[in-house]
Every structure is written in structure tokens, then in C-alpha cells.
Image 1 (spheres, one colour):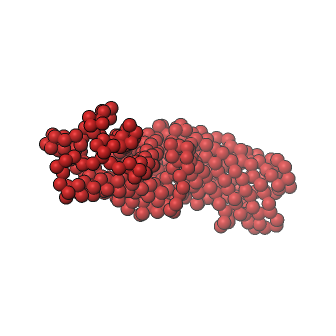
Image 2 (cartoon, helix red, strand yellow):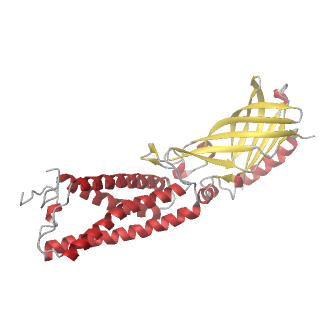
Image 3 (cartoon, one colour):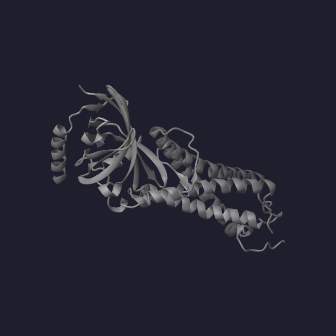
Length: 185
Length: 183
């Protein structure tokens, strides 16, 4: 099933969820390694990969949000309080905001720096702002703060899924797993 | 040390050889373009001198001397300029100047010439050919040209950088020199 049902996520939503999970964690590690590496051709290559994957993530998040807007998520399991639902909605909203804001702030770092960039060595990216070393440094700080925030919210997201599975014993976690048929379908 | 000595010799040689009939004035420009991960990236040499003994009607008798102070190399970004300072790149602590002294100047077509000479860059001397256009009258002239150097011929970008992976090997040099007659 491509779309979501009342009690399960469809394969498109699952695919985008796990693809972004892998890309985002890989991307944070890659960015950290590239930033820490000594200046070398490899470091420059790693940054081209990091920037290219960042743009890819941004586009995938847009696609995911568009798909979500056409496909209501499955309902919360029984027994979840109204305040909890609102909290979860806010947390998921924050996740989406950060999934846009982190790549955008990364693009801001790149755009205000003098270092030229082509997406995957091929596609020119519009250069919107003049190079400015001070702004680029500020953008790098903002990028770092947003990544930290994102990692915290992702950590809470994982803990909440584990809580549903092991403490509340509902299928919130299981229904997002790939290759699993919905038991209620 | 040997590089310093060689550079000093070139300084000494260049002074008597170049009778500075013409010399460069403000408004002269000397740009270079390298590629960074495949994307052209411009820079500029902001400090250079040109001494030119030249009569377009008798180019064979001409003599061109150029001195570039590589401390004036500017890519518009402090981080990138700091890299130029590095021993792997210009090694400015040892080789802060580049020199070009012509061996031969030929007419290619009316107004268009070719200068062949020795370029001493980072302690390496190589023969290079530079075509240029000359337009001048009386006491003012303009020379303009473009040529390509392979940076690895001069050990610029050595070791792990001595390939086309991240920073391109070809460097395009473009100059527009405004000259005045010096007497």
C-alpha cells in the first residue's frame, strides 16, 4: 500500500522516513568529519558531498511534507491523552522545521563563503549573497546550534518510540518499520 | 636557500637587462583563474611591475621583464589567501617573487605578438610563451593577453595537491597592462 491508512503508514511514508533517517545521521557525521579534517583534497571533496547531500535532504523533506499533506498520518493509539497528542504534534512540527532549517543554514554558510560549489560537481547553485567572512562565521554558528537542536529532538523522537514499544506496548514503533504488514489491514 | 639565491640573481639580472622604456601604471590588471572542485575561481595579483623595452615596428629588439610580488595574490578570502602562503602552494616565506624575462619577441599578426621567455616561479625556471595584443601611440600603450600555465610545472600545489582532483592543474592568466613611456 502506497498511502497511509487509519492505523498504518504506507510504503511511501515509511520509505521517506527511513531514507531521511539514514541520510540525516550520515550527513551530520560527514559534516563533522569534513569540518575536523586537516586541509587536503579529501576535505574539499567531503564538503562537496556534504553540501550536495544537504540539498538532497532539503528536497526530500519538501517531498515528504507534500506527501504528508495529501495523506493523513495514522491515528494515535488508544489511551494517548489529548495533551500528549498536542505535544507530539508540536514535536513533529519542530522536526520538520529543523529538517528545513538545518540545510538552509548550511546553504547560508556556503553562500556567504568564497568557496564555489556545484551540486554533485555538476549543477551550479545560484549564488544569492555576496561573500562575507563575518556572516559566514555567524551562519556556521547558527548551523551548529540548529544541528544540536535537531539531534536533541531526534533523540526524544527515538526515546518516545521506544517508550511506546516497551512501556506502553502499542504498535507505534512497529507500524513505521519497513516490510511489515499492518496487522489490522 | 638555493631558491633565494636564484631569485636574487634574477633581481640583479632583471634590472640592467630591462631598460624600462615602458612601465606599467595604475589601472593595470593581472588576474588568474583556477578551478575549485571543477568551478572556476578567480584571483588577482595586486602587486607587480612591468618593464618593457619595445617598439612594435621592431619587436625582435624588444625585451620584457615582469616581477610579481606573490604576497599580493588575492583570492578575496582570508582562508584561501592563507593557503597560498603555504609551502605546498606559493611558499611565500621562501619564494615571494616570480620573475619573467623574455628571450624573444615575435610579430604574429599586425598588433599581435608572442613573447617567449623564462618564468621563475617558486624556484623553478620554465620557458613559457605568452601572446599579447599591443595598442599604443606616443607615450601611452596597452598590452593585453591570456595564457595558461600548468601549476604543477612549477610545483605550485605539491604533494597530495599535485593532481586535478580538487584544484585544477590549468591556471588561466589574464592581463591588461597600461603602460607609459618612461623618458
